[in-house]
Length: 299
Ligand SMILES: C[S@@+](CC[C@H](N)C(=O)[O-])C[C@H]1O[C@@H](n2cnc3c(N)ncnc32)[C@H](O)[C@@H]1O
Image (cartoon, rainbow, N blue to C red; front, side, top):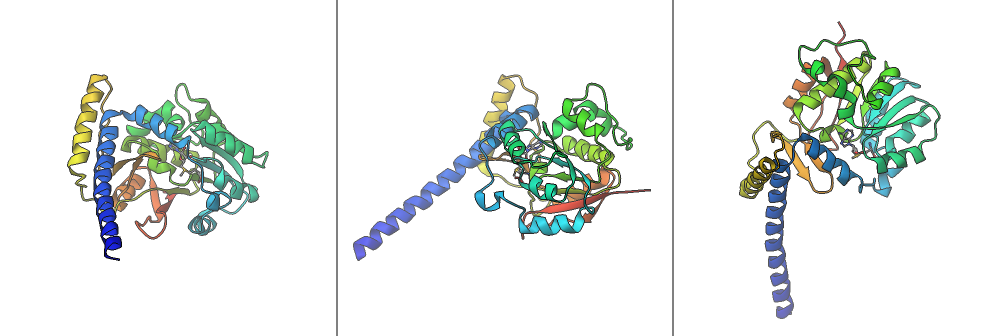
């Protein structure tokens, strides 16, 4: 009996020690990844990691409870014209198709897009390759400097095929940034440009988005391992002559899901305000997956 207790005690202490070192390793790797990669590389790595991701079978077939309540409360009556970004393998798509909505949806990861294409049941659905960065690439600068909302289908120079088709189908009655996808938009300026473009594409309807949150605006102390990893990463980045992408408070790297940003409530409110939206459903940290609904400010 005593021997058994000793063995277990020994095993549990070894496990606790291993966990501590594993956590340090994770923090170091997170710092390294954030320090070493610029904006475009972060985006590419996230896409690559998502190519291995599949929705777990228990939620592959429908909406989450929180999501269904949210969609039913905040979406316009059906059928509507809906733009969905980060549609993945088409989990939400099935629900929208049963509403007979007219959908334009896009996804940057080809492996997931193929699954969405195979799952789609409606001829009214248009599925496109690309991510949020491709949606704004033709007008990114104008969407930032001295922006005033332009008419729904306004395009800039050299629009991507994605931006062109999305614009041709505008205006939309609602924009949905698919489950968690907004979190993966690296850099505040890109997130701002994206919300502003969505505001133009859907000048009267709501924008529904979900994302990771952090509890407050306080600056994280990410520890020594993170700092060591970030310093090494920064050195490697300079060696490779890549531009610097700032590590913003709230930026994270998660091995299975790539880069993501955790928003504070006030940071999200600021983004909404500067993209001419008011918040009609405020996000909350904790208690389910954080999500929010924005409505265009209309003069
Ligand atoms: C958690 S998955 C959700 C997928 C799908 N909406 C669902 O609920 O099953 C997040 C999705 O965001 C997509 N994503 C990541 N970065 C993106 C970007 N920059 N632009 C658009 N989508 C992105 C991923 O490829 C992935 O499909």
